[in-house]
Amino acid sequence: MKAVMLAALICVASWGASLFELGKEAYVNGNYEEALEYFAKAIKEKPKSAEIYYERGCLLSDLGEYEAAIKDFTKAIELKPDYGFAYNNRAISYGTSGDIEKAEKDARKACELKVCVAYQFMRENGFIED
Image (cartoon, rainbow, N blue to C red; front, side, top):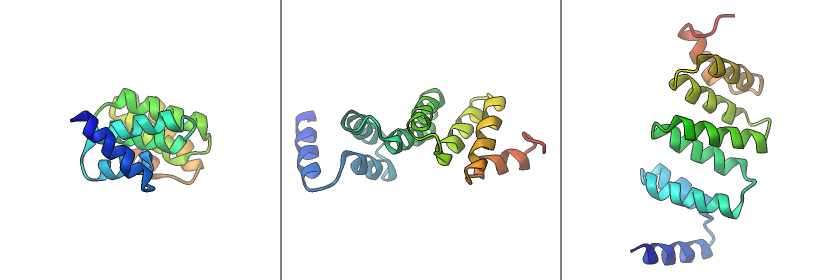
């Protein structure tokens, strides 16, 4: 079965869809394990792509794997230091896993980069006071 999936992957990739795009499509369609496989392969193909790490981090966060998500968001930020969405989502992962101090720091940084979703949520719910 895996050989068939791999052959299909190679065929579809040769039609122009990238591994990253296939991963995003699988993610949107709720095929999380498949999406993780595509993202892992996409990272091997393009290890300096902040967007791939970010997208996989979102998926891992959705799966409740916050520690792994934080690692991917951190890698995305290392590769692209002005990646506001990565700071925002890392803030959410930190907050959800109970590290409010780091969540606040990342939420403030994300807002500096014009992505204020986590920051606004934390303010509205009393986690941050200005």
